[in-house]
Image (cartoon, rainbow, N blue to C red; front, side, top):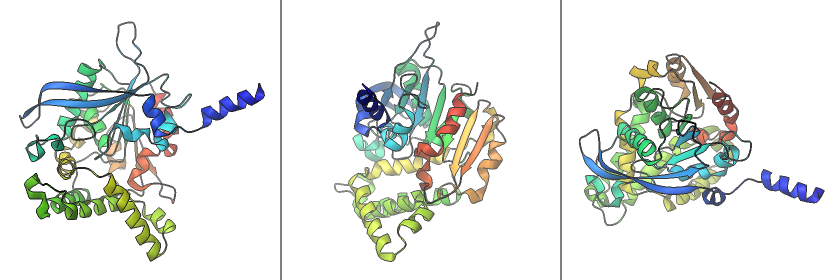
Length: 354
């Protein structure tokens, strides 16, 4: 009996692989007919969504246990099945235990299995922005999933910025916001520059051919991949792990090959990087009166702490708490946002806030 008990406890404590979380999930497409973009363009829009857990309804028939988690640029809802996120949050007794919470993981416009330029329209696809992406998320929730209130929006990177759009454009739809790894103002300075460099590099490749390429524009994509690797890296960890020239180059080659093998369509990348152009929640930040847990990391190239913007802007929201995770050899650069071990205790406190 004791051996059986130990075996059961061991199984509960054993981290699950991404495939196991996928087996516990449900996927579907929600079609939004006549979706109108802010540009006036229209499209029958396909929004793909993955869910975990079961919706629970109150006496009025409203779903009351929904949380939405929003991915970053180039990602998809499936990225949250990685063990550093899912194994830390979704299991029994954990912060987002899927026996209690209904977890919604959308693929945003231009990403994953949702409608995107590479489906066929290429550069004729509507030039979407962050407002369009949030509008589509809202219709996905209300029309596709019958969710009219969220207990939490947790967003990483681009999803962090989407959380601020939600908070300023649809105050109170989410009872709590957890934006991780972004700033709450127009994307400018170095952040805009590296994005534009990536776009320009792809477009400058003769193989791109105005978006009508027959072979991927590899030279342009190489530059874009290199910029992304630098933007997402932790300089402290990279120096500690690869203190020699040979080691650094070897890692670069291996990491690049892995990225290239799983890279995205070139036109999709252009749209993804450009979509932040309409983002600027700063003038409306005072509209955000729900509890907010805003977390950045000190080793984030994309949102460098030297700017000291988040500390200032957090004070505009009456119930916001801002945390800057110190840089160490253990943090993950911009990607610290997806390593739940650094912030799950703070998330638990947020969810306990009324």
